[in-house]
Length: 58
Image (cartoon, rainbow, N blue to C red; front, side):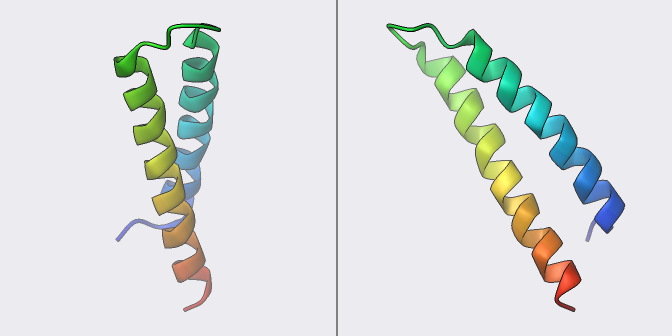
């Protein structure tokens, strides 16, 4: 299991990746690979949030 510091570091990295990926999304005709990247980053971020909550709760 990751430490709280490792989780927070990865979450910060993911926030950057999510922002950069959203910036790559065109206004029209979203490319599936870009959307898949975004969803994967968001899913990992959500998972890390849960891990962090579990660590804080005991």
